[in-house]
Length: 469
Image (tube, rainbow, N blue to C red; front, top):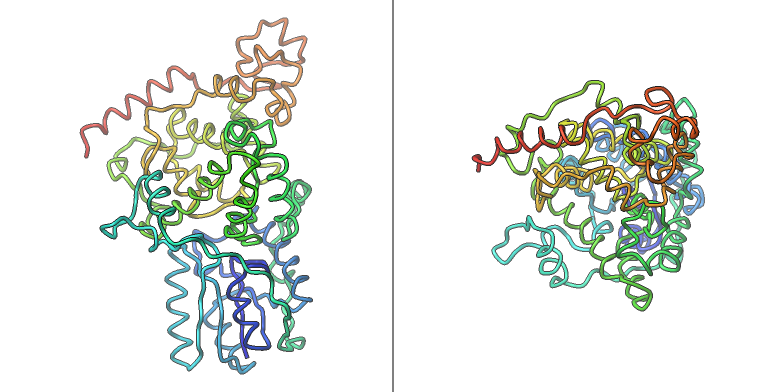
């Protein structure tokens, strides 16, 4: 008898653990919501909404046989193995530090009781230990990591089809329903997110097809323009494992003629880079990778953080991004960089506050990518953007949302404002504001900081670190 423990691999195609378990006979498929071991890294609210629907989709793929539990995995697994005479437990590996520590203990406990444990890679193209430098140390700069560490490593595993036949261990008497996990919020804010996404394995495949047919042709340049449909939006599906990176990687080679797919594949490489950093530097989510930034005078909390979170900073492209996040559980990557820079540099707020807000609000919240990206924009991470590179939200909006399609969608109170003033409404003459139905400070906020002054303050703060190595 075999137990398959689903984690961040909520699919039946190209699921190595499921395929191997199915070869051995009847299976008992389970999911365990483990908030206790996760601690500060337990799923945020938006991710729980996604997980709820992803589990329902997986359960349908398994003909209703998925069993869902919450609590201590060691206890749950031991009891199931005893009750169902399980001889082998299968799972696909996870790479968050807390999961690695937990899984090692679970594996040893099961082995001590004579239960075999088999684990596989279903989440990454390359294991973190396969992409080291020649001296067996991890890369800290992305380009050599990707070009030398990844592309010169062994080829990623070719994806597998779903098992031809699945037979299940009868567990109807102890049916554990998805609803018992209480993943959905008590209020109905999540309905807007649900309307934006097809949270299913089929939805993942359709997103991939749509991207290759419509978005990839202009991907290299178009990915910077939030008003255009040139990004894949695959990140939540990849995080929850509704599609594998191997499926995406090899599909891109099957469509080599359709656009700049090398650039797209390098984005998959950045995901691998983030996981490599998290694996080799497990303190990445809570400590500056560059320790000199431990002395940087970042601030915590206050009204400015609240204004940023609510999309009420007075800078339209910032507010558009933060409102997109709240309404859809997602944010365009170019805008993520703009709002991140604004938080840590113009507002001088600690990057961990941005990371925490993204963790709670993003449906693709991923500990590796979230931590690595926030440290990148803050200047304190691996291969980080120089701290003195401060995104100007006015010029960024004018350059990447020139027609204002994106900004007007999420900041509709400015929709009647002429393009000339859209990203700097405080410069608009009173007559123009009145004609657009805008009263600054009332219908739309005044800027919470002055861009020039805040930039100078950030650079002065950065100077204090130059002597620290």
